[in-house]
Image 1 (tube, rainbow, N blue to C red):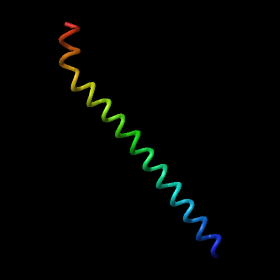
Image 2 (cartoon, rainbow, N blue to C red):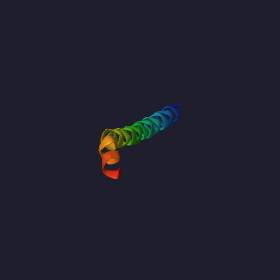
Image 3 (cartoon, rainbow, N blue to C red):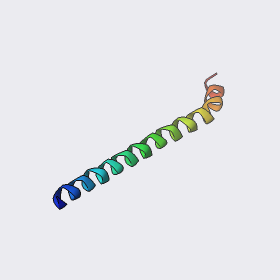
Image 4 (spheres, helix red, strand yellow):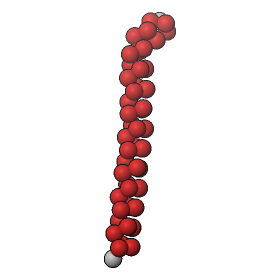
Length: 48
């Protein structure tokens, strides 16, 4: 019974780590897109 509980905790911890890691990646992607969008008018100006 104790083993089962420990195993469940491990799964939950792994899940939390994976979710937070995914969130960090998503936030970085969004941040990158935001930076590009912010610089977009400047980029457009240079291209034209």
